[in-house]
Image (cartoon, rainbow, N blue to C red; front, side):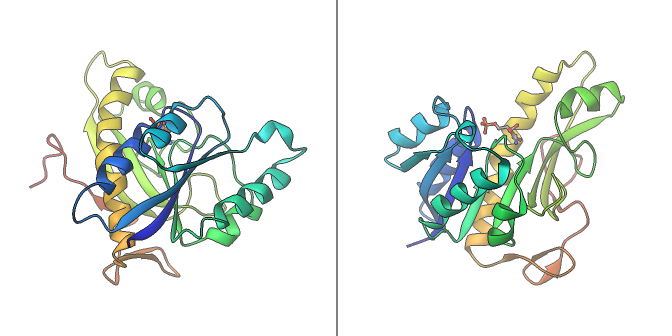
Length: 220
Ligand code: GRF
């Protein structure tokens, strides 16, 4: 039995699919216990059903405030006794009611080279700024939006005339590589959140996490 993962989604779930595919590998150290969405029509729920994974839907619009939604979500997630919670395109800002109980055992992926561009429209912002590279970062979730300690980061070159969509597609391919990898490290007990930041094999990680080597990253 591997580490138990609960995945939270709001949309397409292509990152979820990367986890589903990874979980089928012989050396995978995790299993997906459940997929939870705040949107009933999220395609990710369909992906989960096809893979025989338990699903739940909690409609945030049925709650008077963020805290009461977060309390329901917290209880639903806790019911699956996860070792790790994965936010994969979960488009809700979370309050301490949810973040607190899962601190140190919750990861998010954000489509920018954090600390650049927390929040939305990250690829357009990178293009508008004239950046040479864009990317994605897996990080531990803290109370600060997109602000928790980074674990791993992958970057791609921004090409002339790239639209935000062009860039998003290339970055997404990298997301599908680095996110299950970070979860594998966690499931193997190699990755944890220390007092000062993320630790891999007991060593403090750089401020932007492990630099994942992509085809055009210029790294060995
Ligand atoms: C990804 O771009 C991810 O970085 C962001 O939300 C998107 C989710 O895509 N947090 P998908 O639903 O996994 O396809």
